[in-house]
Image (cartoon, rainbow, N blue to C red):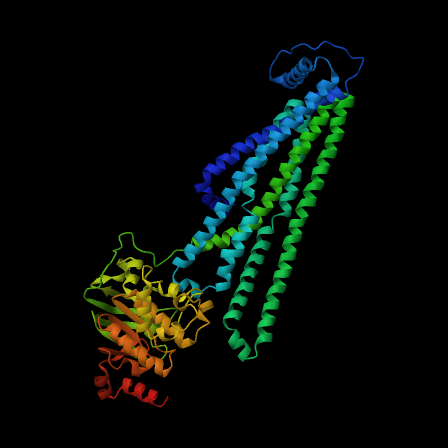
Length: 609
């Protein structure tokens, strides 16, 4: 239930709709109960004995103990007054009263549902937005431990599960308890004995129903977790389809998917069959209570004579009326148990602490003035340090290249300068300020990033480039494309910069995608450029032209360049050679060649490629 109340927090912005819903339900429940009470005078008229002639006088209220008789006599007096002792007119008048009460009940029922639509859909929207916002905010380290498919399942399936299981319970919170309260009041007015007898049996049936639903949360949790596995397998299959086909692994992945769907099939069967047991069980128990009520009520009418027939029939209608909301509440408790698992999985993301969250007094940095300094930093992703006491100073306007074998820690430096991860030891300073004291947004606004994998989105070229500069004009976009040597192919596309490039830019070649990602960084025009293997996907011809463009662009910027192809960084102001997370050499290209050390070996190895 705790998770249910957590979800209710999202209903606060919609309290006006909630108030409208509650007020409408008050009248819905009131008119619903009164509509059954109105049956009593109609039944009296229908079954009145012809030889029973008594003058009808205005009744006098004698206290709450005689409230039922006062109500009956007063209604009969008013009916007789307007019907002028004509039974047909009286019957027509009572039928009109019943129709009016049911009409009012249903009007307020519609209004209650009308207000609830806005509340429910608003909660779903805000909940989905909150999960997505937190997903975007969480650090990359969180997602390295999670399956993408499971995250997708939480944002989509789990929220949908809440929408159709837990959130409909919001409709029951006011309506069904009010229906029960008003109905009980009317039942007590008609017969105190009969009502006490009813409430001996209702709790017993409630205990039986609750025992059936105890395992629903566990079963629902297994179903939702397996949905995450299915989505994860599907996402991996679509991403790696080329490799799956190339290695003839279709059967392996098909088997994995079938095993997951089979588990989902078994879990779903158990869950749904347990849910399906709820309705017939509660209905049978309801009929059992009604049957016992018929027997005991019949004794009161025929033997005890403490209850008249018309009141007993109306009472039976009220008793059935109380069963409907009781069943709805029972069903709602089942739904809460089912939705609780989904709510728990959603809340797990929302409540995950963000270690990279900005400090309350974080500085908004709007310029880069002097230097970047890596000061004795050490970092590890898991157990083993990939950087050890790394220190480096990069003056403004200089280009520093990081080289070394795979796993030497080059890309880790770009992850740390961008604050995708926090350093374990030491600090990174920009203009003497620790980057942990700068707002993440203002830090990253100083950086232009081009990654080894060209990450593009299913949108137009124009919108992909405008990610870093939303106010860029078409001319500025074209200029950035020219600098990145991308305009030569973009100008020949059907809609030039308005052309959609498909999912992950798959309508383009690898080299074209990389040039667009370079153009995106150029358009942002930041003071610091971080190029992580920026030219690795380009062919030799494109690489040369893009390299010239990058060098021109970097003249007025501070640049951190990670390069696999050492020919692309020969003009760097400083080359830093890494090995197992430590600096082993640094200097200009010619200086390092003259040392005939690690850098010379790397150059020699590439000369044979």
